Length: 277
Image (cartoon, rainbow, N blue to C red; front, side):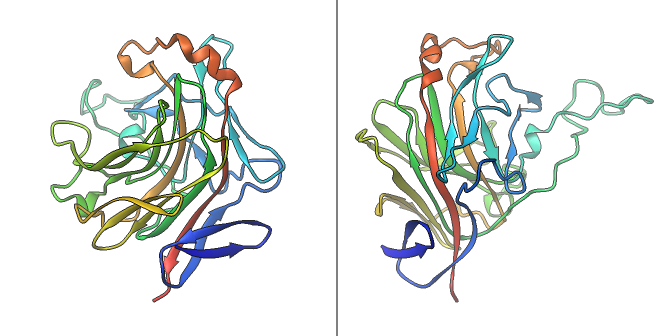
């Protein structure tokens, strides 16, 4: 890997070749830069109790600190940041003055998809972060397409690429999903590998080209795949989630979630690079 210096910040380590930095958040200052990020609040077309627009602070030392928070209604939630949005997350549109021709219980009509703050295709994507320690919530760095699963060929509708997921138990996960999230859901290059908690920052990276995805952990390759490869622009997600809310009734079942309130997931930077042609 090749060191790429960033003034007044930790360097990146990139695959060999020449690179340009095309997008980054170093989390400078004291406030989250909402020109770059939005909060993901919906899941499958409805507000989701595990997500909230609280629990991310900028610590004044160029770090974004994610922590679960306990809301007034008693639920424990955490933040998901994104630079775009999924079409299937958007709540359905309701008409005030006329009957919905599609029926009240149908998928259509979708609400308005917000304008993305950053979308990109190909390149190298990197996060430097310190992982959480307490069981009961997880963290992830990934890229997604607004239209995943809407075409037969994922090249034209995108691929969920999980560059890093950490659910605890000293095992990291990376790899892809494509075909949407129904009967056509498929997996590719999903791997688990060992992680030792050293209370240090780690780098996770993805090389995305027209022909392959290559995954990296602290400068070492963990897996690669040559397909399917997304050929469309995708957005970035930097997320945390308290476990238990996806079990069907919308309530938290993890007794350990209370212990997560004192834990944190700390991010030093997120960067995107293009190879110099």
